[in-house]
Length: 107
Image (cartoon, rainbow, N blue to C red; front, side):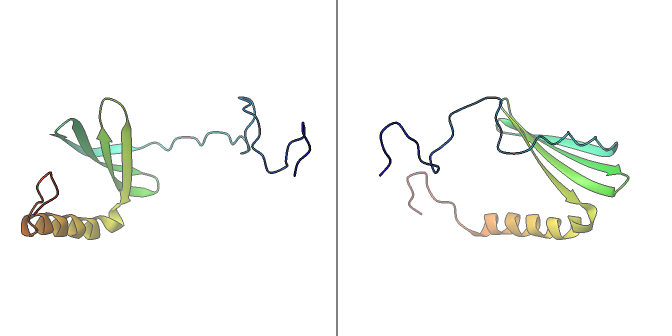
């Protein structure tokens, strides 16, 4: 039991906007990229942008999902593109083979 007026060492620290439990790291410098090709599609309320880029470390595919509130990004090195394409092809095939459930949860 903790006496009245004292805090446990296990209790949370009070909010302090200047306090951070992580040391402040300087931002990493950006690596210049060359855009080789870009394509975009609109799916419902999302825009999906696919870019083939190259930098000093090599080529990569950047898949970016944008909507009015946020932006998410996945980067795939070209060494994994063939395998990634295989996964996408499998998912397209599975989608056509597996019947969709109704919105109420029944098949």
